[in-house]
Amino acid sequence: MRWGAGWEEDSHEIMTMKSSKCLQLPSALCAALWLVASLASAQSPPALSVQWSNGCAWLNLEADIGAACTIQYCASLLPTNNWRFLTNLTPLLNSPHSVSDAEAALAPRFYRAFSQQVPTNVATADAVWIAPGTFIMGSPPTEAQRGADETQHAVTLTHGFYIGKHEVTQAEYLALMGHNPSFFTGDLNRPVDTVSWNDATDYCAQLTQREQAAGRLPAGWGYRLPTESEWEHACRAGTATAFNFGSAIQGGMANFYNYYEYDAAVGEIYISDPAIPYLGRTTAVGTYEPNAWGLYDMHGNVWEWCQDWYGAYPAGSVVDPQGPASGSQRVARGGCCGNGARCCRSAYRFCGSPADAYNDFGFRTVLAPIQ
Image (cartoon, rainbow, N blue to C red; front, side):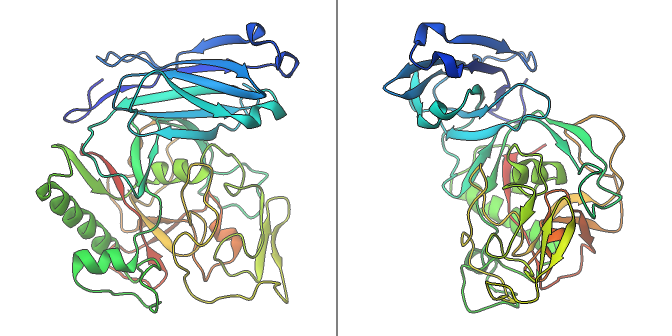
């Protein structure tokens, strides 16, 4: 399947299981091939094998040179499993390539690999490659204080994309747009705020023009806002819990109104005297721990504009959803420094008028072939 100039894709997955009883017996390793989709492509599917040596699992990956490759792992193949990020190779510089996983000694693991051919002249130092895949979007009925608009449904994203490690900073916005509209000033490494959806999409368009003029983007590639499904897929990073680090959040784990923490079993929990004082402002990007895929501030700091119009989720499983064809409000995700923890959940949905600039709204960019 070809998508845009110079873009060819294989979403073959190869998974290898190492039983905990076979840690010292490499010959006992058993492999199974799981083919998610058969896609006609000039690119060869990635091949993944496992060897056990010196107390460490060594994954040997064979794929086309220049491909963007992602390796993930999980503890079982049950439908409730969470695939976790192990490493990105973007682009793959040599093949075969070996990756070690010392943590494999602690429990049985399955592995899978994705690859997509990407141009070599794409600047991605501040972005993370998100491989295609299927995830459950929305929240389960058991998640306390969930919204009525969070109906769970399966989403398949057939194309990978790059997404910013951080929210766009005030320094980045100032350098490109020539002004800083932010309310929370004092540190240019804080996310830009007080930007409308229109401002955010204009930034993406001008960033695309600048990078194309500098020869840093191939034809057919450009910057844009993430779709709502891309945002949640990237936020969850293979998890199915209320937050990408688990079912509960406490002060110090993200920048939110930490007088109200949250546990998925009970809902928001009022804290009369937080151990970590409430900041009442945004923080520099990267202040808190990233999720398993290396993305910062997916919970809290500023709301992040998404590409979609806000509307009801589609019924049943969907492929590459783009949201409603029209509407009056654009989607925003992730919560902000002024919200209680309930609003920072992975599934929580918010929205705003595309022409209005709110002092708790920012954004991050996606780099992908333009459809």
